[in-house]
Length: 209
Length: 402
Image (cartoon, rainbow over all chains, first blue to last red; front, side):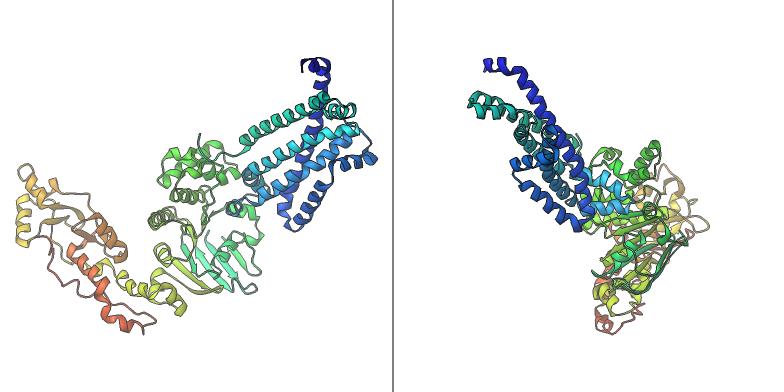
């Protein structure tokens, strides 16, 4: 263990950083696209079924296949990996945003509208805050997926902790496999914990103290 | 708002050819069974729904040409499910519309305090969240939220339907009081006839999207326009309604024993003795009610006071002779007064209601109509002016005062 860290310590830090970087960008893109899209879907219920079906379909493509598919379009490296992971992150966030928004008590939306909130104000002031816990649950789920799958990204040359794992597999070195996997697990746990904190922060208070 | 013209001819089956003019300061109840179009009609006023044809005008201005968002900010809106924002404090809930209208912060704070005082809740509640209040308290906030931005018109859609009867009654009193005090115009949707009778200045009875009758509560009770209205009111209520449209003036005793403040206690006592009563009403020379003295007062103060003026009780409960028995009896019974002076509009003493009178009223309300029950089936246009019979002569004045 100590010798492992002595030998690979600096490399481990670098790979962890790469891993985190790829995942974070993919997740951030996922949130930027999926949350507004989910909100939009609640306004156009007619097409929501179609969009959800497409998102579900994308989710069923095997991770390896999706990564491989990226190569003809985007070559190799971090960018195709980020794009593939972004596609994976979409569904849970999209679905939870949609469900969270649809689940908001219709009486509240009616009251908001009746008092003269514009549609936009109703979303920002009423619906999104009320749906926040559900949306955050989707984001946490996506974050865990993305971090786990980012390990595969090394396959198309994106770097990250996957490098250790693939090297370990090729060289039949258990210490390298573990040295890559364990940090991925720890990373996923820490990120989930941090997002849990964020979830608590964005969940609107409904009682004093 | 002076006139709310509302023409809504045909087209959609939900509401058909609806014409109504609402004056400022009126309390209008829309009543009807489910699917009668009452809520639909109400929701067209703030353009939550749009009409297929016809126009709605507010202050002579066609609301169809106004920005719906701006319109809604001018109209208070209270719904059955309360609709307080659970993630906002009471203060933020009350000032929701003022905030949209970009009032300055101090004005909003002040307004929140003013509003919460209006519904008799403590100021500490402003920092609480809706879930920390009881259902009744929440709906009180719902009511003032609809008034916080000085809305002249308030729409209420079965606001008290989900509350228990006691809380509901308290809120009805509150709303009625606020409406009268602030001179706002209310449009109130309900399916509860008692509620409609209690609150409205005019009732709009609807069925199948059409207006069946528009009249005052008394008018509806006395002259139901057709069988539907009659059924909605209920036969029981029609019968009960008869005593309820009797005024205090019709049942009171007409010659109360009174004295003037200048009289000495000896004179007062002699008068009590002569007339066999235990208390005297005090009026001035113009017969304007000033107060009341009881035998206890005379007894306690006989040595220390000289004139009636020194000991009379000035803070007394009285009723107007033209107020309805329906509104009065319960108040009298609840407070446990023995003798209640009756005054006219100019505060002149005109009569007295004693416990014996109350017995007559209750007796008549319960049994007085039995003989007429068979007849009442035939009376469709209810010309039931039958006064509560015999109450004036049943007893000598102050029969319970020995």
